[in-house]
Length: 188
Ligand SMILES: CC(C)(COP(=O)(O)OP(=O)(O)OC[C@H]1O[C@@H](n2cnc3c(N)ncnc32)[C@H](O)[C@@H]1OP(=O)(O)O)[C@@H](O)C(=O)NCCC(=O)NCCS
Image 1 (cartoon, protein in one colour):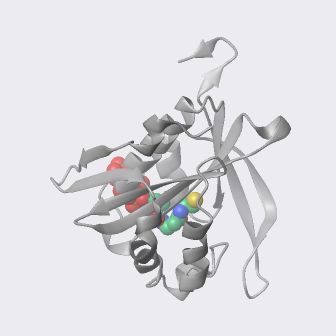
Image 2 (cartoon, protein in one colour):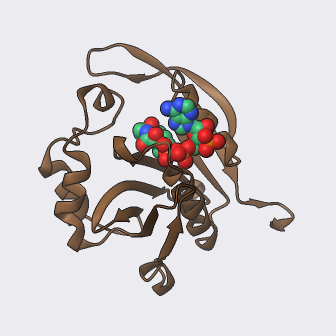
């Protein structure tokens, strides 16, 4: 369940190059800033994404349907501009101890350490929700992205053949990565 602590969560991050980024949960006031983050997404990037993020109606719906008990979105903000969005998707029933993370950063801000800090923050929020493990699915040819998740402690569990179909019908293998936040012995 969403806690007050989550609603007021703030982390001011200083990047290795000195840049400052605020990490906080997405709110209803962020509609235009979130649309502006996704609107410039290139056709190339969009091929690998689940939704047509260039469409303001699609992104606007995420704001309308904001429910932190289903999806907890964390945004990275620089000078009132959203430059990144990482979401933690919760499951139900026998999968309620797991959550899936997805992350997207503005192209101009990549390779400055923001993605790593967002993933660390979101796994911390998952821990606070008593989630046992966080998983990520990444197209297997995105080897750099897979490596960046591994650096943060995610383990490559398997590669699922032909698991993702691109808009033109091409099939792609998907890497399934998991980070364990708890063990049978308790928290670490
Ligand atoms: C994946 C993504 C979130 C990474 O965020 P980022 O802020 O660029 O990553 P960081 O700057 O924190 O880099 C972390 C590590 O990733 C590696 N890395 C990331 N992108 C890389 C690239 N294009 N080439 C080489 N290495 C790369 C680096 O090794 C880096 O480690 P270093 O600090 O030791 O150099 C970002 O590239 C993105 O939004 N990509 C598009 C969406 C996507 O692929 N999402 C993942 C699927 S859920």
